[in-house]
Length: 247
Image 1 (cartoon, rainbow, N blue to C red):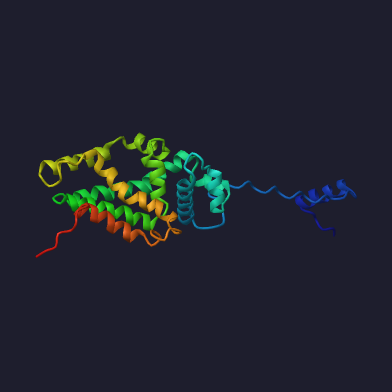
Image 2 (image 1 turned 180 degrees about the vertical axis):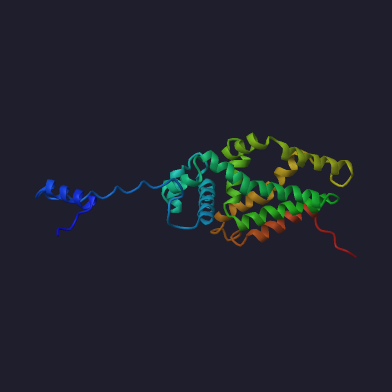
């Protein structure tokens, strides 16, 4: 007795007969799926890579200036692809805003803290600010050159960006502290309030920025951050006159 075929077997048999001796083609391989948007793979972890890119940008900005430093140059110096850099910072303006928030706002807070922590001792406050500038230069060698090039200079792009974001609020606060101390008789009334902060920058950041070129100068090559800090604080606390000996 013939075995009764199922409906599925009948369909499969009919399909085979219809195909005849036709050669079956290997089905094409599916195309590779495009890479999804996101951080390019490889290299350091996200936070470490971002930190490296920020530090590289600061070094190049201090060396060449912001205007003459492209995002491509930062990527090349950091050893990453432009795509990697653009993942973190789409434009140079965005990069500058991040640098202001994460590198320069803390400096401003430290300066404000020095005023508030020494509200009754202006000399101690100014000496603390001078020491802070020197400490920053020791921690971040790019700081003096970048500040002089891009913040003190009227043409500095970083200065313009900071002014656009914060206006002159910090500068006005600093002047008000000086004026207040002068009225209270705690600070020399002959000082020009608007010149006190630039003076602090002048006796710290200028020699710090120049110290890298003193290595071939036998009279100044031994001058480092400790000597610059001691000199600045001596000027602020004792002035230019000879120190009076105690009897």
